Image (cartoon, rainbow, N blue to C red; front, side):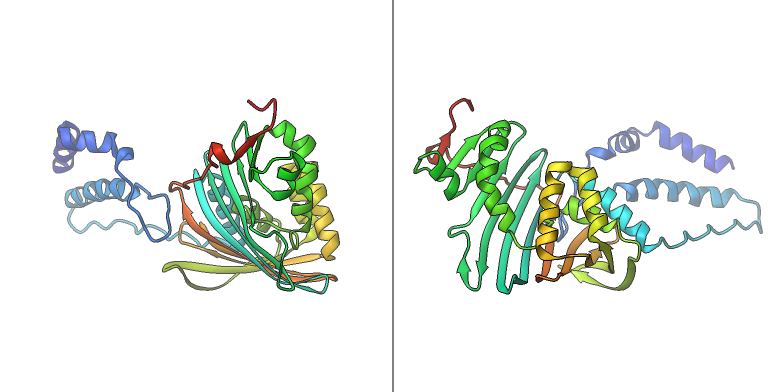
Length: 319
C-alpha cells in the first residue's frame, strides 16, 4: 500500500503531469475520415490504469479482485435516442441529400447540400429535375444568419426588380414577403423533405419498431445499421413540437400531397452513435421516393460562403 501512496504523491507533485491533467481539454483534436469530436477519455484511462497497476502490486498475496461486470448492450431505440442527443450537440456539420423516385407520375431527381455552423447555415438546391426538365435552372441558395437572410432565387430577384442574383433581407421581411415567393420552391420540393440531420434523426425517435439489422462501414468508418418505420402522424406531431405550427402546416401539406401514412427508414450509426447516413423511404398513394442523406463532416469548419456585395441587392430597411 505504501507503494500506491508514494505513486500518488509523486503524481500530484510532478509539474508536467499536473499541467497535463489540468489542461487535457486543450489537446489538439485529431482528424479522422469522418470529422468528429475526439474523446479525451484515453488520457484519463491511462492515468487510472497506471494507478490500478500500482494498487494491484499492493494487494495481499493470493488476493483476487472481482472482474468488472460488462455493460449490457443498449436497445435499438436507446441507440437512436443517443444519436438524436448527439446530433443536437454538434457545433457544425456538412451533409448532402438526394431524392429519387416518382412524384405524381413524374420521374424526379433532386440534390441538396447543407452546411451548418454556430447559428449560421447555408443550403443549396444543386439540381432538381422532373422528367428530365430543370425545375430550378441554375439552382437556388439560402444563407441564414441570426439577423439576416441571403437568398439566391430568380423569383425573388424579379420581385425586387433587380438583376443581382442575391437578395439580402431581414427575417421579418422574409416572413412577410420572401416566404410568399420562395414558398413555391419549398412546396414543390418532392416528398416530406427532411434535409437537416437534427430533424431527420429526431423523427426516428418516434419509431416504435426500430431494430439493429447488421454492421458495415460508411466512408471507411465501422457502423451499425438500424431500420424501422414511424407513422406520418407521429412525425408531424414531432415537427410541430420541435419547429412550431407554421412549419408543421407546410409539412402536413407535403405529407397529404404525397399520400403518406408511414415512412420507413434505415440509419447507419458509428460506435459513438453518430449518424453517418440516413435513408427515408416514402411510399404514398401519389408518390414513391427514396431520400438519402450522407453526413460529410462533423464539428469541423463548415466554410459557409457568403455572397459578394457586388452581387447582392439589399432590401430597403435591412441595414
